[in-house]
Amino acid sequence: YLLHRFCEEEADKQYQLADWRVRPLTPEMLKYARMDTHYLLYIYDQLRLLLRERAAGSDQLVKSVLSRSNDVCKLQYEKEIFDPSAYLHVLKRSGRLLNPRQSAVFAKLFEWRDQVARAHDESTDFVLPTSLLFKISTTLPDNRSSLLESCRPHVPPLLRELHAEVLDRMQSALQDVKDVRNQQEASRTIRMEAIKDVYMDVEDSEEDEQQAEGEDLLLLHPDNLQGGKPMIAQGCLHHFHKSLVLQRSEKQRLSDLNKVSKIRSSINQIPRIVYENASNKEKEEEEAEDTAMAEEEQEEEKKASAALEGDGMPHS
Image 1 (cartoon, helix red, strand yellow):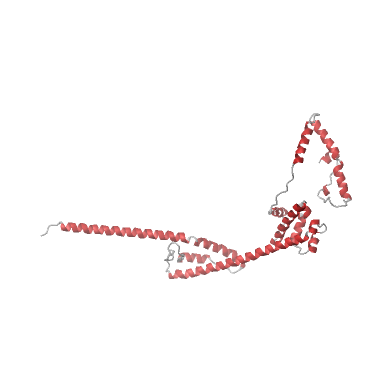
Image 2: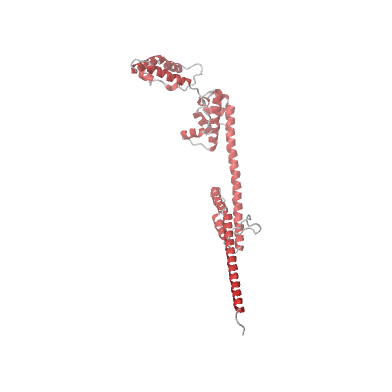
């Protein structure tokens, strides 16, 4: 802006992010460096005159600007704390879709380039530009030659030097994905076995129902009324059995798990229902006993009154 306003020149920003450590500098880079500094003193004089003009010939505005510039010079640079999840924002902004293996490699190399950049006091883009990070993550080279080939024509110097570390990180990421898949498969197998066990338990309990002659209460083991194993009554078992339909195909496994989860949630309510029913039954029995005792007492009182009345009558 200042170059255009005071000098009527357009700045070429092509080499702002170039690697200025390379030697020899190209003619284009030398020209850019000259143009970038040639007009600085002239622009400084023009700004100083403009500030004095606005302050009616006073140096007050000039001193204010110099003071603020001095404050900026006192600021100390602090590196940002690395955020392991920052790679997700990069993926989201890019709009690219990576599969699990590619995403794992992207995350590993994203962390690697930050560590190398801090160790060598370089920018992350100098260590590994984001464009190359995406290219490596999508092509997944597995040896030195294919790795360097995927970065041509401009192979980052530190990548060339530390290519073994890059390949190790990539293999580690791919192995992590493989381990997770194995764990998921093992967990899926265990869950399917659990589903089969629940299914068999429901079938066995349904057979017990038929022998219970349609009882509508939940019975506890007689040896331990407070903590015994519940036996599901016919009505509940029929509902559970109809709700659980095992599908053997892979596509129905998630549906199976959801159904079993609902069944288990319903079964968890069994103790509460049992204890409520048992408590209500005990109350009914106590009330019946109290009523029977009251009736017996009334009957005895009637008999006693009748006996007393009989003793008080005159004999013939």
